[in-house]
Image (cartoon, rainbow, N blue to C red; front, top):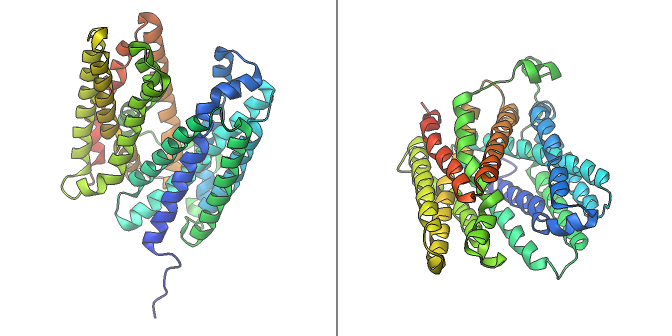
Length: 398
């Protein structure tokens, strides 16, 4: 007599994708309302920007430690605790008026986001290894969809619903929903390590740090396009074309929509082509198309600004489509090539990736400061995307 699984494979995937959607929806809700958050603290743009970066402190410690904690206690406990911590911190941070308390909450948010990222991706890798499907990439697509939906809704809520009411409501809804789904998934979530010989200590965090340079360099080069467009895309479009804020954000929205489309449809493509072939083609097309579109658009006369605008949308869209599978695919390669459990791999990969992408951010910011041109600086992520094609061989599953 066979024992039936408590949750079917299809239900498991749907529930996991729902968690990723809610994760993206919950943590990105407050970003469009940063001006109101800054006003609560009575800070200048520069000071507020500096305090916001404190979240990276929590993220760094999360990446360094959470993978080992997930391996030791399992996905459920880490996810459960950090859902409560994360959305509890969001409930508080929109009410505080003191920069010190804000910074403390922001560090806690950075740590909890990282902890959930590691735990949920550990589960996604677990499902992918059991099913042979592209679960990690599709899960990332649902996270992007949640982030995009909440960004659009938040834009509509500005001026109509108060900051605190908005974020309190979103946080309560996401916390209750994610905990309910996690409890439904409990029978199939990755359990705590039960083999002492495979245990990890605090010392192991530093002595067994696995550096896979081809994967790390390829990953950072490929995904920096997403960071660069998120940081500068809307500002670039608005300043270059002098159009209203709503239209200036449209190229970024198209970028995100095409990321989502690419991640959710990649399974169909992989029936015909291997992932390393798809990734190599994607990096080259995305990098070259983005670079040429921007170069042509900024050199058109001002009376043709709508042609420039169309080129921006086209370049951003192809960049999004080309970027779609790269981050999850490099991460899957890292998991396959590493001797460590997937929870540890996600954390270790994130540490090095954070260092590299932060370095790229400083370089781009320096180029903009030196040249006064965002267009020139955006050639850097385009070049990095092309360079990433040299590392796609790590995705071969031989």
